[in-house]
Image 1 (cartoon, chains in turn red, brown):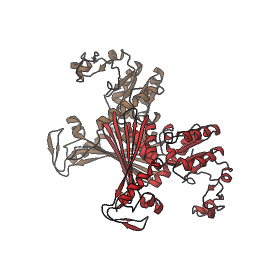
Image 2 (cartoon, chains in turn cyan, blue):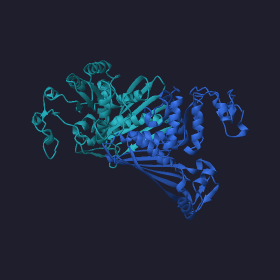
Image 3 (cartoon, rainbow over the protein chains, first blue to last red):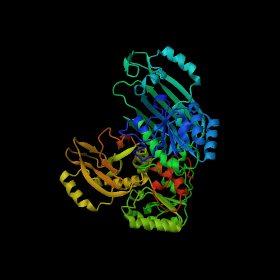
Image 4 (tube, chains in turn cyan, blue):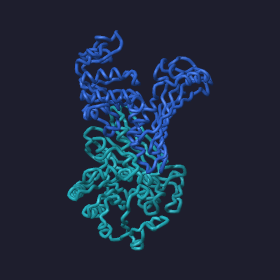
Length: 316
Length: 316
């Protein structure tokens, strides 16, 4: 996608030693080499002084802070798909403020985006703009565990018993913030709402009939866990409550990724999307945010600070 | 709605002599008078120097030009629901430029909005921002003739034969621009696309089984016209084509107002809304655009020049 938008790729940072030194074109399966290499040593790649680092390595501040810090101090802008850093002012205000200060000092921009930007935040905030008064906003989204392999299926507790799930869930109070929570925080910011309180509850999704899990290559019998649903709720000083139920589970035949949003008020209004290519919209949205990122002032930016998301033909 | 947002209403302009001089609160059915009156003489009302005129009188430039001109020269900002003036730079560039010049000279703002702003333009432009590449955008929207009374049912050719419809349709080449056309022009502007060409075709919607028309208080037999569909297509220099099929017909039991949008590209993405309270979202959107209108620079403004549509608790 970056090449199709005529980006000049100067290098890639890779984790595995087997890719170190390889041509980036070869690594991504292009018909010919790109003439630039992959580096396991991030500092060596950042010494190439890229204008922009596209970072898709981790979801949470714990894993993102140090890589972001290094890009910032190398003088590079960063766009990333990190879910927590989509809006981390409430979940980790200290390190968010540090990154913001570093970015301002270095004159670079850090922005996180992804599927959420369009489908859980920008579209929803516009929808809210068609209502005269709003009591609550309710979102319901789902993704298929089978799209993401065995490790995530285990993370998502697939194949455990309800008792095992309850034990895990009780012990999981130190889970990092859900994607739903940071998405609702970003929505609040875009909709001009001030956050009062945030809560998360989690319920198991249990097989009503046997479901075959491709990621684990086995059938999950009736009564066992096929995934779970995080229910996030954010209250605001404006009295509007924001809710998001996000389900990650093994799909039955015919189920597809979907987003349903209902703005309850005068009048109640709704939008739906189904049959979504979430992994593809994630990347499309990132590409479309790049020109806005490059035109913005320096700092840790959030999508509410940028112009309305729109399609772009070029990178800037 | 204006009163609930704490607007100070200074007067109303009415068409019928029977309302002239009456209290505005009495006219709109409030429990007590508002202490301000209705005027059939617009100049008398405009002499009250309102900050903002909310104008909901007509759809087309032919009927809007003179009232807008008078508000502008009275020194008032205007927000309106006129469908053509949502984006009239292509359908009537001369009078649009005149109004723009007048508004800039007088230091006031003119903006048109409505249901289209949210559901046919802002939401669609954001949706386009989630795709990597776009070939075409297809919208399909419908409204119920029975919601708008007998006059509109006749305008919409309800109860005519297909032969009568064909004769009307052939003679209707001097119809003013469809709502679809100006909506697609507004969408192009918001999505950063430059318009090459615009075409409209119209097809009759014919009763497949007998349908009762409440507006005309009679049954439309099988084979007769229950309304029609305008199909607008706009081509752009960027190669993206925009399509909108807008149906206004007598609904069968269970049909509701709906909007379906499909962005065809990499990937193809869709949003749907149904069960819409179109008349209500029209007004909600107007109220939510007022603070942005008041904060903008003077001139004839279009929604692509304003910040993203969002919910507002106050008027600014």
